[in-house]
Image 1 (cartoon, rainbow, N blue to C red):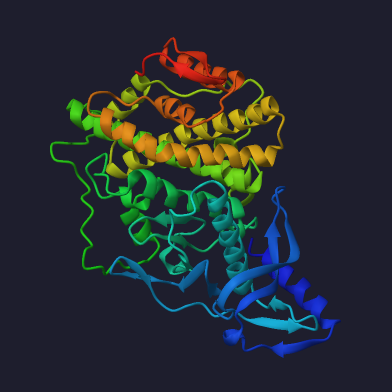
Image 2 (image 1 turned 30 degrees about the vertical axis):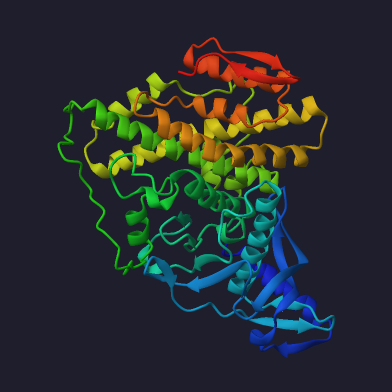
Length: 447
């Protein structure tokens, strides 16, 4: 959106030109709660200019405070972001409100506002104590590296990294849905993945998402100088990838790839769901990355069946990964498969929330937050269930739904039947719903 934000800046300055205003302000001493004009995207994915209140500011010039600490073109030192703070530029109008005068300042303000809102949402859904605030966010990651139009949550540094945006759509840095998506990865990482051994025996889990951490940092031009940094092994002992030749994998290795795909897919799907909960926009990703609308929309097609894959099907995908010419093509295929699985999760959870709102007769926004609170409660229970059972089974993708169902304190019949139908359809099981003390429960053996 290189053309859009500059146009918004021009509109801002034109409006100021016809009103009394001071010159460029020294805003390093401006703190507390401050009204700032910023382009915010609404549920229809459009930008609208409005004055928003940034609270808990320590320094308006750096747009730093209780909710965000920014780093410009950062490096990593001692497993934390390290580098200078960006310098915002603002003009104060006659109403003692501030107007950013360039694109970077606008983006800093918008990111701070969204993270401020997401902190409130964390509190509302029971995740208030999970993250440490302020959140560290790296912006303007080196464009010379060639990596553009992306963002990453990195579990090692507990930060969000945003690379330059080059399309003419809604920039990732001001897309509230994508920021909520990356923010959710921090919740999944801390409630599920932290201190896990990597499901595939490699150092890729620390992204907390579907990205390969080492590849992303290298492509973004970010140097990790941490004393604890270790090389990212690119080969698995005994694994040989060759063109046109099948390689027999041990069942142990197949399960490692299976578990990696399962966690990556679930993490991405829940993060997409989180973006929808925050914005109400089922196509928030397409607002910035229109080429991904078909694959990542949370809307269900007219003839689409809401469902998940079976454990057997997922195992077959895991066992086929060796049939690639290179490790890079394998990683690309694996990421695509994880996003595909994630979309199944996000669409069925959105459909579940829509049906729940109808069945309960409650407002759609209220229902989204309620389902989000059940997901927060589910994550540690899912982690425990996975740890206790994955050694003995290929953990079915549907099993997350059964753990999820157990966290709904007042599940009604329609909600239970929806979840049971998805589980039975995917796994060929015969689970059913049972009314126990005015609460429906999923009954039947876990597989």
